[in-house]
Length: 330
Length: 190
Image 1 (tube, helix red, strand yellow):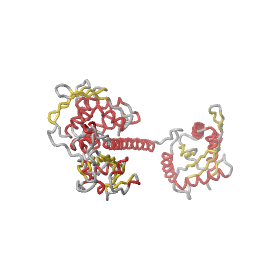
Image 2 (cartoon, one colour):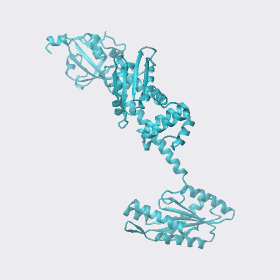
Image 3 (tube, chains in turn purple, cyan):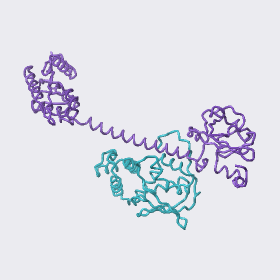
């Protein structure tokens, strides 16, 4: 530090200096460029050694040093600079005084590294061997590529699962037909009704299911759903279609049931079967069911969606009338 | 992560030999049609796939693995990552022992075998793959791609014992393929 023999032994020529620090510049005492490292020269472009360092760069931080016109005050610590007229070109820098009276400035790219790479067409060789700037780029690009691949893979997997689920026709928990299969069957049944094959549509909704689910958890809820499905299957015939539409909502298509009383009788049997307590891990789980009934053919409800809406309205009426009972669409 | 590796083998097979080969392999190994299930992350799938593909194509397995390594390097993104690491093929050879650490940094959990790099007295660079020996063939293909990309003429050979030999014949044999640090406009080119 005192300019003695040790300091003299450290003297390096500019060529060697700039191989170590390609973003460095040697400055005269008055701030003019004496020599510029090759990478810094690329960054400066036209602003060659003729001009001064502070004509090319302005200090942005520390704020107290912004506007400083000589280099001496800038040697106290870390600096943030930007190229004049180019707000986005941000650099970090350190400036130290030299024994000769001049200064040595060394710069590094700030966060806008990717932009700098593009603008100045820099290459791997433009960076000091010790500079981690390219490692940052490497990491961010590698991560981006890998994350992209992983996301795409997850999306493909999800797509495959969705397709598999849509194609499936049965509800996995109960083994009953799912909503998709039910809608297809209802379409066919409505067409057959037009050709003189009547049927009754039952919409079954469990009562007090939410209470069981809330008190005992999903596993208990699943047990109740499975038991209700078994009751529905047991109280209908093999030719009938039974389905779980979702949640605690079921449906049945009773083929060749034309009479209101016959449909209501089956519905009451289903409700009684569902009301049998379910033993689950030492608990007795009790639910009931309300059922809405619509029959086809029906002059008012000629389309599947109309028939469904009629059964749904009947179900609502059954719930309003005190639950645990069937109601027939008007 | 193994799923990602399995997936890259699938891409190589489909891009090089067409979807029919993949369909046949998927059926033979009872894989889902579109890709080996990444969730299974089963390392064994890779080996079984590679072996079955080599059998169907009537190619020696080492050759198939070399081709796969070359294919990996040819992916635009991978090629770019290599060029970010070094300026010349020679430099890359020095750098290569860093590669497993780097790969781990990029994606923890992506296991890459360690590499032992030594310069032989005759100037040949010897690389020992500290993992399944057949992986040396993948690296062999990959390094051929790297050498070519840097415009170097070199002989890269792999033995079945997990050892590679790299003989750099002429570092400036051809023109290196163009490369810019700045990102290309089409980010999803890979």
